[in-house]
Image (cartoon, rainbow, N blue to C red; front, side, top):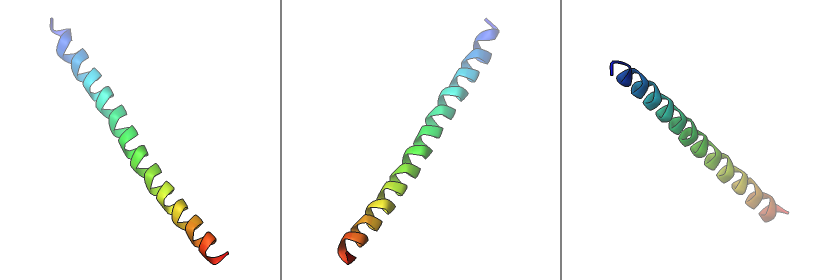
Length: 47
């Protein structure tokens, strides 16, 4: 049973790492989406 903590910690780090990656990616994509919408609104208003 000495292997269980090692496997559990590796699994935990892997899952949390993947979760953090997708959280950061989602927030970055939301910022890009908002910026693009603002640019589109400016073009429609000036055009």
